[in-house]
Image (cartoon, rainbow, N blue to C red; front, side, top):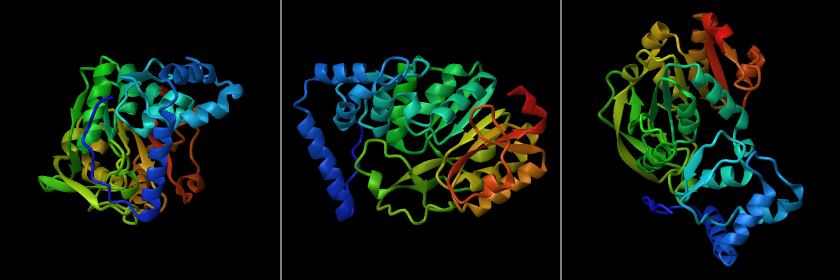
Length: 319
């Protein structure tokens, strides 16, 4: 297992108890030999991601055992491999396959990248979507991730999959006159993990202010317009900063007219206004699943987190 930076634990009593319980369970499950774990896994889920109900219970228990391997391959995927770095995501994907983690979104991203020439992914985290997209993309691919641990894991995952041409930018995205550095916070419930998910900027975000975060780091920044220039496909999953970044890159977005896949948090009023402006300028909002059906206004504004695919009308028939 790769040993990445361990962040200090500053959890509340309940979450600390849950973390300790999971660690105790992991320690107890260490008595199960690696060969037995591999046997259960292979009986439970095959290379195509098909699961056997007979092995559901032992698989659900052994899911909590840390992995003893340098890397794992995602069942039911397109051959994607992930380094074992101690993240929850690698266990989810190994035990449950592509179908166990945002399968429709991963398939949509793979499909979109296959038809793109210049891709920008903001919020790459440990690089799972980067691997999925870059394997399919025939052109340039740039992955942006401000969290140092997550960016390190992303680089390892890309290298493991032979994707040396992907440019990993370790920085937070800001407007044209933004600061050289910003504060990146890590949610307390994730701070015990390697490469914790859900890190967010202290300023310029919406709908993440309620998240308790006592651990943070200063990270460098990069201007949004500089990154967006000439892109024909953009993905944003940046924990409440989506509106700020799209506003900062508005001129370039209207000039390049990329397809945009964006995470919309419930109640993100600024982002809804940005999306409304794009719809007025000729984009269409669709579900990033299946045959990409259009979203109704009610679906677009429903009070829940969702991914929204924004497609310029002139490109609707090409996807």
